[in-house]
Length: 97
Image 1 (tube, rainbow, N blue to C red):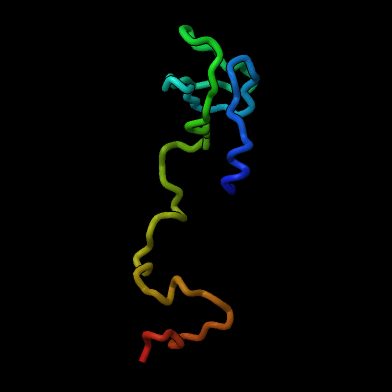
Image 2 (cartoon, rainbow, N blue to C red):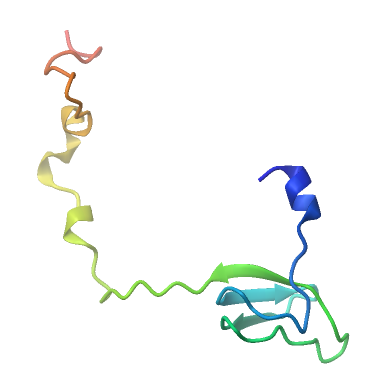
């Protein structure tokens, strides 16, 4: 995002509806987890404040184990295994002599 686009973008204010579930921080550093459809709360001392999204609420529905497809295999240290292309021929690497 360019600087000009960021300049024109405003953070949500207290009283507005929450569009994305996540962790938000206000101008004073107060951090709160808010759910989509809720309302941004006012600060108890200063009233209306701006809120900034700090972390998305992401539920990936997994059981805490790494996907077996992402675990490194024994042959993964071979550079040829990472360079797969239909026009690539074995032995055509610049490092091959």
